[in-house]
Amino acid sequence: MKKLIEQILKFGVVGFICFLIDFGITSGFYNWFGIHYLVSKFLGFVVSAIVNYILSIKFVFTDKKEMDKKKEFTIFLILSAFGLLINEIVMYLCIDVIYDHSAFLQDMITDGLMVSISSVVATGIVMVYNFISRKLFLERK
Image (cartoon, rainbow, N blue to C red):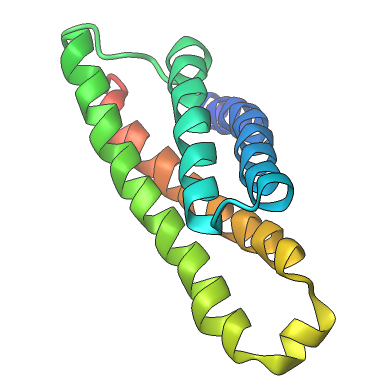
């Protein structure tokens, strides 16, 4: 149990670093360059996923010694693609479905702030998915 708690804490630190990368890229591209929020989120997610893979394999998860590194990276890419899909769906739901159809929210929150809030929500949901899926598929049992 102690190992699991330590692993969750390490995952949290790596996740926070990657969150900052994802959030910075997503918010920066949307707010400073006017790039559509789904494209901005895609770019932020891809960069942070690569950093997450490197840090997770080095510091969080015990890699499967019997698994070929190409196969391991392929599994990581597949899991990340599902994470990206979840991320984009959550962003879309928060902005296009909820925010765009709520005059109340639009009066209270700017578009840029809503993108930032949605990014945090999406990242939180995907973080749970990432931990569970990577623990199941990429860690030695």
